[in-house]
Image (tube, rainbow, N blue to C red):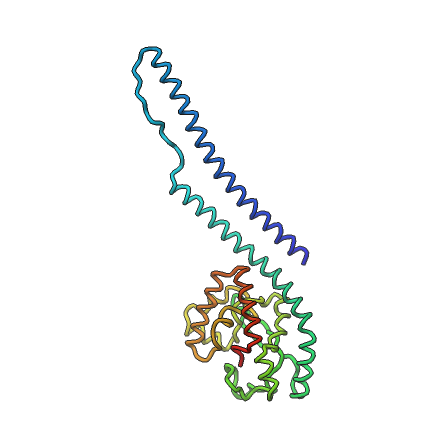
Length: 287
């Protein structure tokens, strides 16, 4: 943890030095150009004075400016800014990991009493099954991992149906409490452990089951692009769009996921987190 913080601080300092260096370089370039023009003007004045004293004709020429063209400076500045943006985006991945660890640790401490109560209720309401369970999901670069969840379904709920999407009034849920825990998203809290293990992030595209991904890759051309980053507990698609019901809904959510990947930064993550709090309190998007 301290190493990550030190590395992030070092990267921020390096970025500040680069920006300062670019500013000084541009300033010195302009100053050197002005100094060159001033020196050349003085030299021309001196030569004209000597020619007049010798009785020679002189022709007055306007000093030629050799300052860089505006278009050249714009292109140069754009290139430097592009490099700075790419550098910042690369380093944000490291900062994001540090952010994930801090947030997940704090949330786990707050969530432990809630999980203890919820786990006891699950065991009483459905004594045959375990309190928590692990489910295979597809993570970054298409690598499978086991995602932790609080059990909200009856034991062997998918033994006959297989992997299917959640439905409104799902009959597989534990009576009353299963729907309550899903509505409040309490069943997602164990995924904070996946964040600490580096398999997930706090914010990112939601991970899907391998059974679904296999078919979605064939039906949606850009689906694999969402696997370029770690999946998240919450995401842009989850807080701004409804729950998946059809392939058309998944295609719409893919656009949100790809937009997040292109625009992700600290401010975007914070906005999604604040929106997530509102969604949890109102129970939107849960099944």
